[in-house]
Image 1 (cartoon, rainbow, N blue to C red):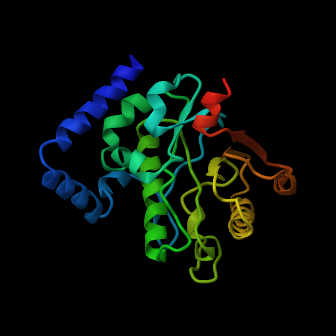
Image 2 (tube, one colour):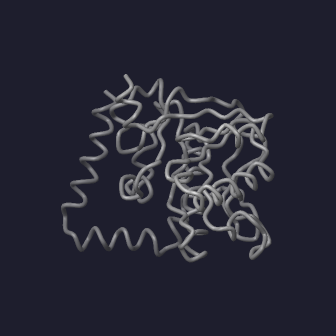
Length: 246
């Protein structure tokens, strides 16, 4: 039943796209140029001078048994997985443009991690902020529609996780303190430079948000986790490794 529901949504997407490449491009352009679907944040509360939508702390902190990428979600038992977007942005573009189509499907899962929209250090700051906003907006929208939402926290260069340029740490706006959050570490600790920025951003996040639970799609070095003894870290294998380990 679930697989049929997911496939039905995706078939509808394909039929719409098949009308013409021009129509599809025009619709996507409109979705992005009108303020990143401003109707998504109707009724939201906002944080900071940048007005980032707030994803509220859940009444109960639920730790998913597993995480499944959006593009693979029909392959996972919804009673044992939360849906995440730790994959190439093109794999979850449908949920950014047409989130309403996925409300009923996502309610069946243990939870939904707000989109991990790319926030690269070499991006212009305006784009880093845009993708942070987009992730919170989509997360808020699903939370408003009774999906259990866990915010994904992603930072870029130091302008997003310090106050050296902006008066607020934009990477953490829209996320409430002492809650459950999710981060991705794949590719973030592969070399000295990436590990430096990962740890610097993580330090700032922990200081700012003081989370009770941090879900990690990937691994966090033991010596790093030891610094945050009051926080529970829950690590998940990536989907391919998870399937192969069974």
